[in-house]
Length: 267
Image (cartoon, rainbow, N blue to C red; front, side, top):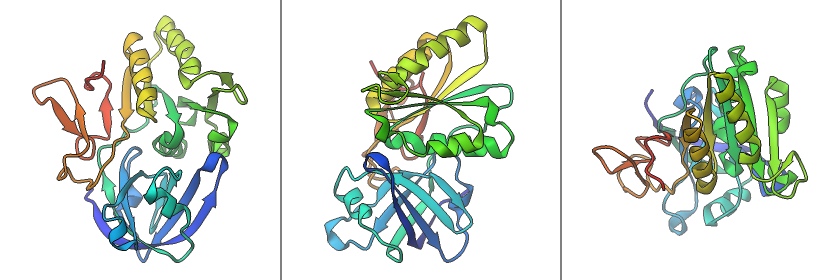
């Protein structure tokens, strides 16, 4: 599946809790993004002139035919501009890009571990699994600062995916970070010799903690990394990831963003 660049227009900009929003776009005809795997991403750029020269990278939340959606939060100049977009506003889209998660496996239980704007790859993985009749092989582990940080939960409930929640203030789910919910589950899987794998996306400190847990319990752990990307094609070399092996670095945009936890060279 090759990437393409195409023009699209905003069809909806929906405010969610915690400052998050979903941006829905539609092109004039079906696009390759409709076949995006969970974890793959698109580069988006608005009609912003010279103020913002580089596009912004976003994981695909959902795509079908000529339509696609992303989840974002206004952290910087680009996402603040996108927060203010209205239906009809133009966007340039490039994608799908990168390497995504593997397909759901009926013989393996996927533990989907999400934090912040890292939810979309796991949301799409759950959607794909539900469409394949494998929702019962998926479990969501989702953490945030408070209950408002946990969005789109109704989708997982509609698909039949059980959600285990954690908030730092204890307002929803267990009190603590998402690893507080994940750790006992991995210990149980190890004790019962259950076939599970961890698929995770979120802030780097969260991914580092998930990586450590997965490796400690001998569980296959796949990390969808969040790095700043200026091009999406491995040209700018701005998204280097330290890895083990002959090459000391690989690139998040072309070699990832999904990496095996054993590959990543973190402390």
